[in-house]
Length: 177
Image (cartoon, rainbow, N blue to C red; front, side, top):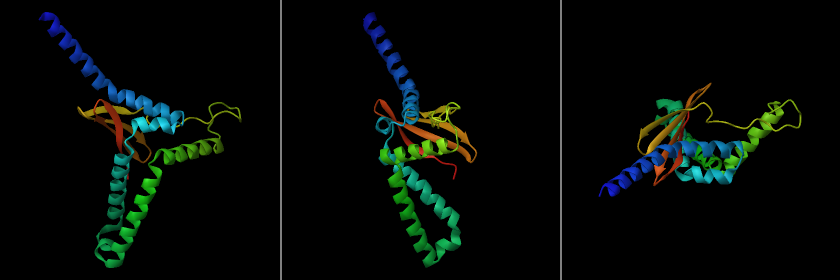
């Protein structure tokens, strides 16, 4: 009987350790995939449909707030807002895919090379890798929600991970709009 209790305690501790380490392993995997520009690896760590929906909602909210009540209240303004939201939603749908992220990373590489931001002083050196999660502060919001916050010149960017079974995936990026 005592052996069974010890086995259950050890299993509970291992499960708790796995759940606690899960988001950190996901952040590490995301960082490595971005640094290596490996978009196929991103699929393991990102819930693209949920991320698209959350980013689209943020963009729609931002557009409506920037337009103000005067634009929202007249017919032409409302039509323009609707068109702007559709255009923004289409852009988000195109960019928040493995291919879209790959294009962004390739653009980052070209920008780093053009601005001479290279690993070494050699003209043929590789450009510095993108490290969006470097120096992030981590926090559990609940047992199934985890955030990593980085500071930018525009404000904090919060990467939200959510537990899906025993794995963790990126489901939202709260932008400083």
